Structures are given as structure tokens and as C-alpha cells.
Image (cartoon, rainbow, N blue to C red):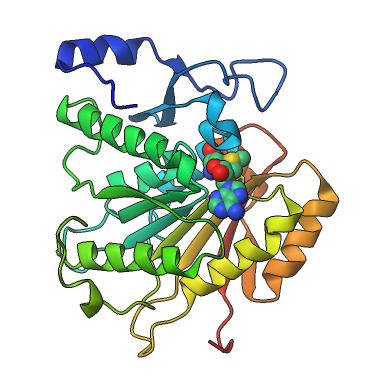
Length: 294
Ligand SMILES: C[S@@+](CC[C@H](N)C(=O)[O-])C[C@H]1O[C@@H](n2cnc3c(N)ncnc32)[C@H](O)[C@@H]1O
């Protein structure tokens, strides 16, 4: 997967060949309309383009979905709930982000580029693709082709199948060590010094609501990741979830399950359609309910 050209000029030529993942490019809206392209350019804001590689042989997770473009644009516009224009100062501890079911990983890469210490997660077979897209973003930044070059960029990829507690713990420990300036995962000896239950600042979920048998596992995973730290010193986790509603009954089943443990606010149609024209796409700001038993 790591077959990027060595020279900056060759990289620039490669980037020029990228297909533009433009929601308005096709008259007929079809989830798979960009599936045959290996390299995509995603315009997240007028001054910010990102590049990702995809591989349809890896199934749904090998492709970029419109819900991910919407989530990326929204996050870039509203990086923290408290203040719409704020970027993060490079202080310790830095804010942290987990992307679940990341696939090619665009929203998580955007999060890392605006200052979140980030881990992209998905099932094992997608880890090499996530790694390749992290490397691509690093190369794009080195070549001076990214708009957020001055921000620190700390992004890794890890296996996380929903419901797997060990994988959740491992992702959180890695994040918290890095957020406190503990360096990369390799050779980290102080891993046990980090609280295993400190929640991340942000969780990103795009187009994950489609397999009914996984709904419970996904909600359990969100619940586990968001549990407050024992001393309740960490602010509540912000969850942003985007989805294309394809089957209303599945959507309602998932939402009913989610609302048992989380407060769910749908972001207005005006905001969402200003970021992506497809009327079936929805975006939610979610928080774990206070007072739930741990
Ligand atoms: C439709 S794709 C969306 C990918 C990406 N979030 C996007 O929007 O471009 C669904 C993703 O969920 C992941 N997924 C599905 N079931 C999962 C599970 N049980 N554990 C972890 N990831 C899962 C898939 O591997 C896939 O990457």
C-alpha cells in the first residue's frame, strides 16, 4: 500500500490525477459513483483540500462515503462545540479523537490536521488502508500542499472491532500518552501510567448505521469509550455522527437504542445542506447522558 512516489514533483503529478469527490458532479446520486477511482481529492472548505486513497476490493470500508465528506466539512467548520472558529493551541494535554469504522479515514485525518491527537479505527483488514492515507497526508503536508501545515499532525491507525474492550483500552491509552507528549506508540514504557478510562474529547462516526445486528455493539462501544474518568476530571466527550438514511425503520431502531444512553441533537437542515446537497444525509451531535451507572 505504501507505494507513494519518492519525489515531491512526482507526488504533485499524482495528486493532479485525483478524481474530485464532488457531491454535485453526477446528476444521479449513487453511493458507488466514485468507487472505481483509486485516489480522491476532497474539498473540505474553499481553502482546504484533502487526498485519500480507496480500494473497492476491501468492501464498504475501502470506499469514501458522502457521510464522511459531510462530517469532515462540518468538523472543519465547527472544530470545537464551544467556539466555532477555534483551533487548538499545541498545549499538553491536547484534545483527542477516535474515529470508529473509519474506512479510508477522511474525517479523522481532518481532525488530526486541526489539532486533535487522533486514532483511526476499523476492522483489521482496513488498517493498512488507514495507514496509507495517514502517510499520504504526511507527504502532502511535507510537500506544502496542505492548508493546515502549521498545526502538529499526530494520527495513527488501529484495529477496533466494536465491542472489543481490549482494543478500546489500547486505543485510549495510546491517545492519552500521545496527548500528554508521551511520543509515538513504539517503545512507550509508561503506558500503564495512563488512566484506562479517560474518555476522548471527540468521537467521529460516519455511515456506520446499516447492519442491524451491529447496532447494540456500536452503542456499547460509544458508551464504553465515553465513560467519565474515575475522578470525572475530563470534559464530556463530543460525538458527531453522520448517516445517509436509506431505510427509515433501521434508522429509528438505532436511534431508539442510542437515546437510551445518549442525548441526541440533530443539526439543522440548513447547516447540513450548506455542507452537502444530498437531502438524505443527516448529522447529529451526541453526548452520553449524565448520571448513568458506569
Ligand atoms: C459504510 S462504511 C463507512 C466508512 C467510513 N466511515 C466512511 O464514511 O467513509 C462502514 C464502516 O464500518 C466498519 N464496520 C462495520 N462493522 C464494524 C464493526 N463491527 N467493528 C468495526 N468497524 C465496523 C466497516 O469496516 C466500514 O469501514
